[in-house]
Image 1 (spheres, rainbow, N blue to C red):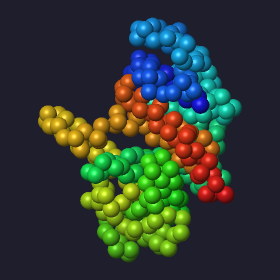
Image 2 (cartoon, rainbow, N blue to C red):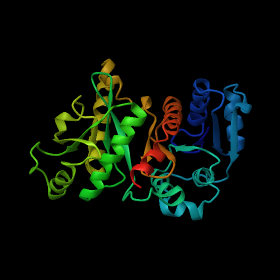
Image 3 (cartoon, helix red, strand yellow):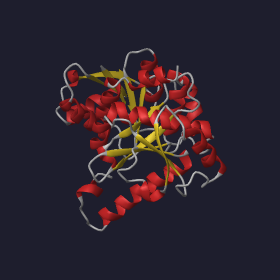
Length: 312
């Protein structure tokens, strides 16, 4: 297995990405190679700072960098030798099994859709986030930003994608799916939510438990929370803000410490024909390590293949 990491992506690149790759290498078996994609001179320099053996990694040299302000749809034509563009080319050609970046999220989504392509039958790919539960488990919420507006059939597919992710990567048997709404009754919510509920209520594709409210987000009673990307992003950012507020107050709690984004690294783009991972722009070395480790778990679970089989 080969996992590609965009060395130049993120606010603290390439230092944080190289440090994270070194940490991940220590936890991976010898048959898994990390492919460092970026400026080779900077890669070698950073590896030397950590006294890391460069032979432990594969390197692919690139000469251009995609900034956070670059227009996502123009990246691949204007910067074809950037670490993101080259990473997607390697993924498309099967030279790497997964590609992760903490760089321009829009460019990563564009590359996912137009390079490795969307799974046939999937209307819109999406991204998800983990929500810690008090019993030690994790829930999923999707979408969290890539689709601000969704139609009912798109929300239905999010439920399918989230169930597959929860089951095959996190080992949750028959995941419980809830539709995020302003009330539990089927007639509550806006027209999209009402129509989505009508589609989902008799589904044989997933275990639908009905509408859930905001107070249920961290509950053990639901494993996969479905919503549009606008709503999901607000929920996610609110959780991040709450965690930051707790840390600023000098409070420490085992449960709330699990809200730290570093623990999870990033999220896969669900509904495409390969494994693409998107990380937080502020990712440090721990977050980079964890996005690489999660990439490995998703490849081993053959998640993309399982999604393709379901949507045939």
